[in-house]
Image (cartoon, rainbow, N blue to C red; front, top):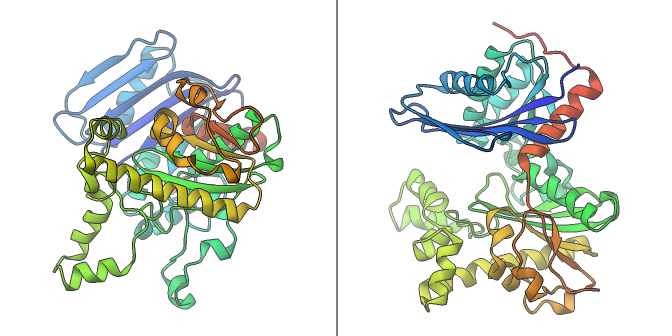
Length: 410
């Protein structure tokens, strides 16, 4: 393998996000987004990082095949084409890898079949991920392609954390267990936090709070996940933008029996009409905080519920880990919402947790500590970089093993 470039693809049902990175120095060469695939109003926004000047094209992009061909054309215009010998591999974000995929995996037909078999536990995500993989393989059948799974980082959870307390036979038959998600983010951030502390990942215990529209927490002991808030699906756990997070399972029965709602209606309620948007009509934390500052009681209640759940998980994972070296905030809300960070650790001084108001108010793109000097437990903000994590895992795999592209079936 002579190339050092990795193209990272994140294929959604109607979108493709991408970044091209050079792993000789982990630099970004280009990035972009194709959205509204299959519509007349499709749009591709492409940014070559050498100039930083974005280009856009609008008009119908009928399918993922057309989308990736359009991406290839944009990259070629910058001298970064998919036919370049510098391209070493393509890394694909795959949301659900089940128990089977515990690490990045070179994609062959058997891997594709297993990802497809997991569609029942990831019906919104795995089909779109598969479409992107198949399209990319058709464009570059000679190139190693690697699946990096959101669930992989969490496969180190002990059975005591991963199992639900339901009939074992039923659980095993239907693959019901806690898988966790946002794993590439939790892996990257926990490792970056150890570096910020000047220690090896194996030496530190970290609580990672990935707070975006989707939100999850993880307890990481010595670089390995031992618990995480999301479960069989990304619905469990923290209060999110549109998802309820933890709720009594009997709510579903009650809504069906008493409310007359169908399973699909309840699914939509809990995943798309709950969380912050269900509580106050907004799922943008900036708008919620603006409303709170203006005295809006509904927004204040939503914020308080959000923080209450967050504090419960911090306390729970403190107990799980026994010793905590750092609590770290990441993702859109975690990196940018100082009031969320301050409220989440307020009154937890007896656990060694506090933020310095001046440090907490500083905005920046670099990992930083926001706890007072000498704090027993550090509080940090570490911007996540899932694309870099996917590229790093992809390149390490193909470089260390000298992989060529595996044969494809008909």
